[in-house]
Image (cartoon, rainbow, N blue to C red; front, side, top):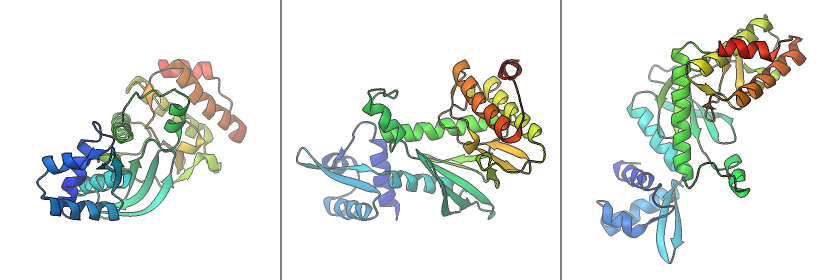
Length: 275
């Protein structure tokens, strides 16, 4: 792919808030391509599945795909000398895909691509509980990536046990690789009391310093390496809410009580966190 293809992708991205499908006529009028060039580059992007084509009211129209947004993110991270190369997929969530990659010093890093709209958020819309209004899935993906990057940056600067954020693409976050095991796998811990204390400490930093709560905390999004727990997956972090905080704590306290026979009282933990 060269500059013309990237130019077209960026044009479709810029117009994704205003148009669900961008009319070909608008593309022709507002870009530098003559009709022959435009046909060629649109066909190339379609073949690569970076854009989608549909007849809208009898006219040709196009929109960028998630893969197209990913390509723009990768290019941005590369030009910022954050991401040198992308490797294999290492994880897939409800609204994201996570890849291994390498920085320009050949250190292994992680790149998380946000892809809102495939599962959970679609379900909300089906039952008329859409909390996002009329925002496009493209806009939601970008905003989720920005929110998670902001949350990680705040927490990491304040000493929380979270992956170190390295850079932000359009819908992608580059961060350090946490080479550990999920807490949900019930690993043998040398000092489970200390691990739980570290988790609570990170929750406190998020709550008091960054004014956010994870919102979906469970053993599945806590990675443990050498008895150090790192809380991952913060895209749905929300403003501090007592109800959400209590729910997050309940999941973790119940897990440690069941698997490691550690008993803690949530009211006492809440007092410490608010303290």
